[in-house]
Length: 355
Image (cartoon, rainbow, N blue to C red):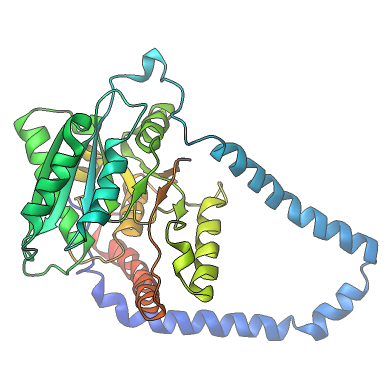
């Protein structure tokens, strides 16, 4: 049975605001109860030297965490070592580029980084996920196909036409695209869907030349990597200098938090991620009415895997452009905040699934 979508979650939307307000009130009460009048006298009893040791002790885990990530990211622009002989057959890599009326030069940058992938046994396949309302999609895809030449295994263009019940966005487009990939590779050609690694990227994504090789290496390191999500650090440096100071500050915070995340906590992909075609089919592909499809995919993977940490952090980068204009960035931030609806989706799971 397919995991439910956001349609079933809407009945829980009215509860989100009261839950948010309750959380805020509880925090304010906690501050009032344990305010300066309570905390101050307690701190006065602590010797200054001991206070310094406490500060140092608190920051030791943070230093260890940063050291771990520096080691993890060191020289990851190079392909990883060749897999051991027991690693199994090489993965078939399929990269889905989701776009709508993007400038050809932007798409050409993205596709070029896919064609330049190194350290993999089989050349990647490129899927351009287009919208049928984009009149220039055929000319654009012909130009991109000619640009790639023999550096990719094949080039496919899919078309998405908005259907009743769908919302406009990356989620509904990639849903149609990957269904078509499954039909061609699995149903027609008989490939094992768990040996086809799907990587979903945005139209402006720039992949490290070793990205797919690191995905495959991480896949082979797992006891069973077939039902996991793989994601690299968020990075928005390409047009960083073109943004205002406030946007730059926020993007530094986002990238730093994602790159140097706590490895013991749940890690979520942002925009770009990889998972096997078989796992996508098991998860019911993408919900056709869910805007935060990256977080939603990771959440569905966790539900499928009985609540385990299901996203594997890989060290290779994919760079995306940041939104330069303040107004557009505010609109994007509002869209990100709608990720709170995932809480309603989890409520819907408890009601509609036999958990």
